Image 1 (cartoon, rainbow, N blue to C red):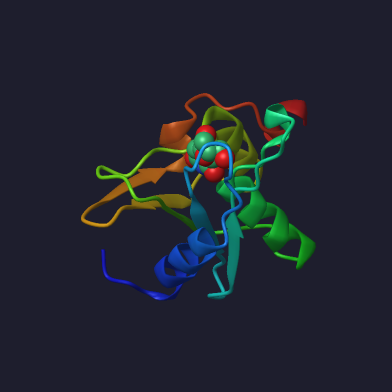
Image 2: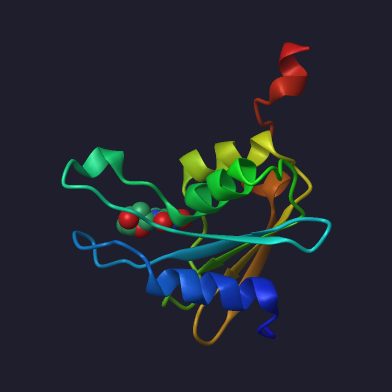
Amino acid sequence: MKADRAVTAAWEARERAYAPYSGFRVGAAVETAEGKIYPGCNVENASFGLTLCAERAAIVAAVAAGATSFVRLVVATDRDPPTPPCGACRQVMAEFGLDAVVDGVGPESSRKWQVRELLPDAFTKDQMA
Ligand code: THU
């Protein structure tokens, strides 16, 4: 995939991954409709279950900056084919829009999904209305 701003931000965030236990470094970047970019990386913990994935870190950074809807989320790892996001991250993505595109990028290849396809029949705020 062409290295646009969000792809570059995800690769740069991957450099900042804190992954001393798994060694699996992940970078992510949220892109809003206005073209704003919010990066995130995975942050592990000695209490392994507290690990935060890069996707959720990017989403949390976007929300903290005031952006609550996004059109795209780029996820960068060193794997080809690129790895898909975990289930917990899919649910958090769904909170902020089922139409967003998720671009997985690796060194040699890319994959594209839509949030609604990653999490079919999602439980969202609409169901509580
Ligand atoms: N990880 C992510 O950051 N995103 C994913 O989509 C999958 C997994 C992280 C969590 C942990 O730090 C490491 O990758 C191995 O699971």
